[in-house]
Length: 444
Ligand SMILES: C[S@@+](CC[C@H](N)C(=O)[O-])C[C@H]1O[C@@H](n2cnc3c(N)ncnc32)[C@H](O)[C@@H]1O
Image: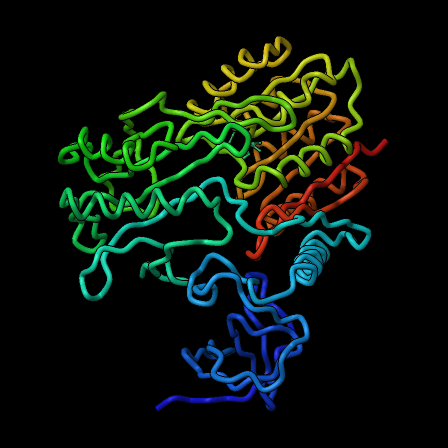
């Protein structure tokens, strides 16, 4: 029998779920419930300290509730805030980030700015879409349901680039006509696992990566030929083989089936080559806002020697190269370093050097005037932090996509560095994520 409870939403969790209380003060996590709303919820799971529920009926609505642009907004695990006014969303994300910094790093970030997006939709230039089957064994593609591996069929997503819709639809039709099976995780059977799409915002070039369990894809040539005939806007098609039982999407081996195997794009006037495996920020316009802000805060001088640590394809380093004497970029993925070196040549930049190495190992051996760090979600590793502190670099610009690990690292750095500013850029509108940019200067 359904258990229905009346609750009031008092806050959001870090991942954008409503945090609600009943009369007795018990806590409930309820996706899509907004602060200030009262609702009857159905309890889905009962735990010792809290329950998880779903909205049954809203009794009192928030004045900031809006109709989601996407019909699957509640079911799909991608967006948390499609039902909330965008101005409120960024205000709330700023508040959560400030609280996290306060509680972990014991640093006050109340004077921070948040840079939102003018039109917070259709911004994602990259998606990775799983293909599989529904309960009736029909071929589907879409996104994973919140905290599960069930695919919610989605033909159109309002945070993705609009070019993706037609291509995914065509791939599904071709799979049916060429009798290509989708991969089934549980039985480790079938061939097509994911489709990765990447579009250059400025170049308009489109890359399709077909992630397959084996490169022995039946009628490979004819399949690709038919795909290009139906979608001539595609500029390159790559097969990526991933035979392993894993959540990691891309495998090691690749085969270019059409075009040059990569795309170009442009950021702040610099041209970039992007391969299937290289990291490239998903929101082009907000990435320009982020980098411009980070570079402004660095207050670079003509004689400065800069380190772009965790440099990916060299974006930050190449963009700042014109303002400084020399740039060094360090990155662990070899394909990204190959791209970074080519990107320097492509833009005729002669004062940038790229090294494929662990960022911590590299920093121990070298000295810089300013270090830009832009690590993955797990933040800076202890080796890198140690080297950074020992190097006594005068200026650090820390860009982070995870405010929790950023705060953990800041707690250590603040003993050696003044925190000149902490700001936020909304790189991922409608989701709970937000990017942090901090500017630190060495204590005298
Ligand atoms: C958030 S991305 C930033 C890339 C780049 N700055 C940009 O904005 O496009 C983090 C990068 O760090 C790289 N990386 C992860 N661990 C590393 C390590 N130990 N040493 C060097 N690079 C690493 C990843 O491969 C990835 O390209």
